[in-house]
Structure formats: structure tokens, C-alpha cells
Image 1: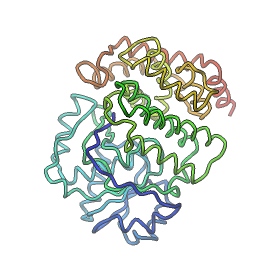
Image 2: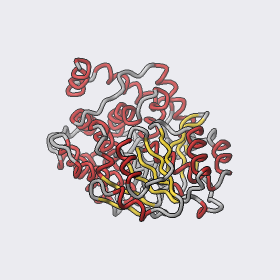
Image 3: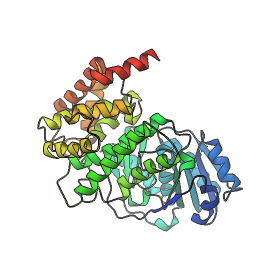
Length: 404
């Protein structure tokens, strides 16, 4: 899902390693640091700089749960924080965003508990006292989610994974420093680029044409060219560009005036990831080709066929080596970038994902409107079959992984 452009996040791009000497000018009052526990080096650099003496909470990079929010909320209240600096990937930043908002308005916790059973999307009501929310300064250490600027966050509840939306969830300040991206495994860098690519492509496929189409096509071509360049070389400058492109999928013009629920693949992939325990992009990589094949075959509920062909022609102009067939071409791109898919999708996972997709996003809800259980199950069955057959380069990737 994408959100409207009613928020205003200040975006700051710094030279490598500059964040520890710059962050103090972005905070206000009592400031605390919430950080991915795996980022000890980056944490120590911040504490040796402007955040010297600041209270610190280390978090495991894992899906955000209600217990996570209690932990971060208690940290904020204990130290009476007026600013919270978040350093980490999407889950850590989501935890900071949600905890800061729920601390300012505890009634939101009750609201989420009541409404989480109705839909996979929970849109929060207006916050009574938004100025009481601690200022959030978010430093991403990963690429793809754009959590530092998005107005949504994921929360695992007792009834499943939920997408929480509120204009107050976007960070007050987003800081890009390639020093924070240095430890990101290369595989996750490519996964992040694919996530950003599919956020734009999926939303455009589920939306009507508008005057910003060229912005979307241009962004897709830039992401593909950068990803292909990273296959040959890597470095701070390229990682910073990747993070900036990821942020641009939320803050740029490419997705203006689109259907906020246009990227149908996201809802199926999210449920598949939750049920299998896989990473979101591993699940996404498994379903995107079958979904695109359905679009190319004219199943309009998944997306517009003519827009898919036009979109993919822009991609093949940027990379003529890709197959002109979008479903085959996206498989080639994922293989080239080393994107892994689920090794198998069991019959039980298939049935549970179908049921959860319909229950949380389908029926009268706009996310998967027009799609029934048979269509969702067909896509998942195709994805499961591809894991077994894996023709061409994807099979080569599987063979390499198994030999390794």
C-alpha cells in the first residue's frame, strides 16, 4: 500500500560517517536511541558523537509485535524522551514510529486491538495531541522498505500481520548515511532494490494512466540500471544511491495520484511470508512471476495488461538482455540479482495463504477486490510448481545454492 502525500518528512543525505556529528542538530530535548542490536559499530559511533550519554535500547531485527511496542514505549516513558533516534532496518524503524505514536495517544492501542480482526489494513483515527508525540529521527541501515519516510508500518498481532496507516507515522527526519549501510549483506541490498522496483511497478499496474507515468517509468529504469551496476561493483556511493531511490518511491512523483492498493502482489506475498515464516521479499519473489503471467493473459483484477507491456518495454530499453516477456524477464532479473525464492510451498501453506488473503484483503475490501479464492490459489499453485521445475537460469541458481 502507498499513502497520500499529506505528511512532510525532512530528508537529509550525508557524506559517509557524518551522522554522529550531525544528528544533534536534528533532535530536540531529551533524546534516546533505539538501534538494531547487530549494528554495534554504528551505535557506538553515534554515542561517541552528538548522542553521547543518550539512553539506548537495543532491539532484535524481527517483525514488530505488541510486546515490541511495550518495550519501546516503556523506554520512551522511562526517560521522558522528546526525541527518538531510530537506527536499523524496516522492523526497527516501524517499532520506533508505532511506539512513539502510541505513547502520545495510548487509546490507539485499544483501537488497533478492536479493528485488527476486521481487515489486514488498520487506518488510525486522527491523533488527539499529535505534538505530544516524540520527534522521530530515522536512520535506515537497509534498502527497500522506505520506512523512514512512509506513513505505514507493519505490526504482528494475535490475529495476523497488520498494516497500520497514519499520517503521523512518517518520520520527522530521515537521514541517509552510507556508513549505516556498510554492513548490509549484498543479497539484502538486491532484495531492497527489487522491493522498491515492485512497489512502483505493482502500483502502476493497478492504477490508471496519469501525467506522472514518465516519472514512474524513469524511476524503474534507474533502479534496474543501478542494480545491474551493483552486480559488477559495490561501494558507499552506490549504496547511498540505492537508499535514495528506495526513499524516492515514497517521496517522489512516481506514485502520485495512483490507486493506493494497486500493488496486488504485496497482499498475497505478505500473507505467504507470515504463514511460512519467510522474509517478505523471498515470498514476493515466489509469487511475482505467476501474477505477472496472469496479467499478461488478461486477468485484469491483478493488473492492466497494456500497462505491464509498456512498463516492461521501458525496462528492456534500460536492459536489452532481459526477455521481452515480462513474467520471464522478471525471473531473469531476480536470478541476475541473486534473489532467492521459497524452496517449497506446501499444500497447507497454499490453503492458509489463500484463506488469509481473502479474509484480510479481499471480499468487499479494495485491496484484492475482484479476486476470488480460485484465482489466488491458482497463482500460489503456479508459484509452488515453479519451485519444483525452476526452468532456465532460476534452476541454475537453485543448483548453485544446493552445491554451496
